Amino acid sequence: MKQCIACGMPMKNPEDFAMGDSAKEYCRYCSRPDGTMQSYDEKLNSLTTFIIKTQGLEEKAANLAAKSMMTKLPAWKRQSPI
Amino acid sequence: MLKNKRQQQKNLTRKHLLEIAIKQFGETGILATRTADIAKHANVSHGTVFAHFSTQEDLLTAAVEEFGSQITQRLHELIDTNSSLSKILDAHITGLIEFEPFYTRLIIERRLLPANVTNTYVMIQSTISFHIGIAAQKELDQGIVRKLPVHLLYNTWIGLIHYYITNGDLFCSSGSVLKRYRHELLQHYIDLITI
Image (cartoon, rainbow over all chains, first blue to last red; front, side):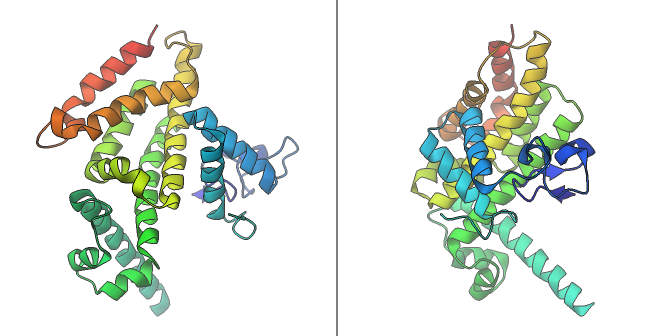
């Protein structure tokens, strides 16, 4: 099964992919409305928001966890400054 | 061909080391476990451990990731088949039971562990919360579940589970505290959030 290169989510069904296109390497949560992949800063921001929304953590802890996760993902491996 | 076989063997050894590490961390505690103990129980040389994981921290992070990927994969599949909130929560407990000794040590010792472990732990909790939130939203739309913020819906659930796990010695002196109380905790939580 493919995994999103930008957030690691498993992508099985076409609707999991950006624009429902299973040829894409990233998921619907990591794409912009026009179908292109979000930038590093956009993804860092949305992942931080995701952590706060799902656990209520303070922004600093959420931001650190998001940055740390992004260093492990193919899309961001080279550019993540921790 | 030979290369493939070698790669396969390498993957198997890595998997075996992770299984033994998870077991050892659970039995003796994360901080108290030495890589030499893991090597001994895995029947490999100490050097083999470092051929797969460059530091002890890498090994521990990989162990936490292994736990996380198994538990979240199961929840992901259940969401795919439109399972009820109760089924998702039940699967969460089942997943925790499979890793209970390790998970218990992880939540008790977490603040003393490297930042990387905490960051990995945070992502796993968020992924679990996300899946529970999806199932809860469906039941909220059907008027079954109370309208609660996702983080409080999750923190109420995980807070209950963690209270029993961290005080497991008081609730259940031998065996699995989650196995013993799973039905009571699940039923209580469902009653709390149901309209």
